[in-house]
Length: 522
Image (cartoon, rainbow, N blue to C red; front, side):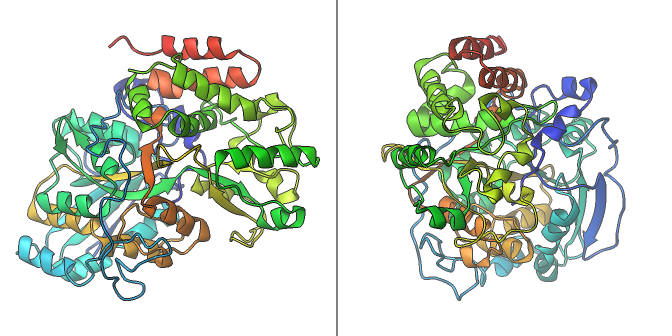
């Protein structure tokens, strides 16, 4: 899936909406440019937002509205994702076909429709309404992915997309005027919606599919107070480093597979006169958010997933040794004048360089590496070839050892239901199948899923395929973006501000203490 290029753009919502959503989660990170659009699969077009909705003032989905807590009562804990074993592959291109990782599990191409008809009979002619923040071309591609559900069940699916989704969905849930299903992009927002009392638990068939096809941590993020509510939908991977394969080949550089190798490579590049790293964290009112991703990546690799989980909830403070050490590690790269800011300026220029421009010097050979998520590729200019031997590609940000598996920072949406009618449950089940995960990637330019029944061969773009291989790696240990799960005053407030001041010269101790001071008393 392609995340929002300007995650930050969302932080311009009005103060009134921010107050209403103080406990809601962070950015949707979904691409799109339409404010609202409604279409129906298998039925008539019904323009407009659901009853009771009204446009929120301000910009796009709020990056500044993070959840009050993680909602991550993960049954998976710090375990690896290798919970489901491989089975006989389906035919090439189908769900469950063994991809490049060999990690895909048996699919359900031949069984999903029979299950729908058996478990939810008599639903033909019914309608399921969906509300989400996935707009524009990506939203249209998403609609095309579920056409065969209508062909199988006779159920019409009405999709309404709105760039102000994250503000509006809470308003609608509180008023009771809400669609049957919403695609919720953050665990914190899911928890906020559950608190309205309007979200219904996922049916047993959905829970069984999630147990079969996903890393246990994903189920944990959709579990609140011991009750499981929603299957994952799309996914994205943040743990990537962008580079130019052609430049690496020309200069004799090899993609590193360990953190130590990456630092040694950085030193060699610097000694060769090729500044290794470029970055940019300027993003309007949300300036600083890319710095949080770097810190999160290092915490996962250096301190491990258990510490990461406690950090999200506030049990581990920013000033505590594990996080303080992680910031020192980030500083050894970001504050190293021999390393940054390649092709742009000095260390302080990171704070004033727009996020979208941070990796562009890779194209001119002035920068060797840029850490950013799979969605960053849309920012490169002049349509470069993005491929393993092309102009641009990416590699997994290496782990620091084997003790914590293969840490992977992820994002994505969850299929949250506000009704338990049979046709709604049938559609929830369908979206949790390996069959649909493959449909989504077949019709989309960039959307992927963490469903282990997804065949990487069905993913159209090279970076998406790489991301699926990372997600399906048996050693992968997935965690959602920490700042998106912290209280808004911390994750999208003090942390953004203080890390920006840190990159322009503020010391570590002052930075970490100021972030801790923003943590709500309750």
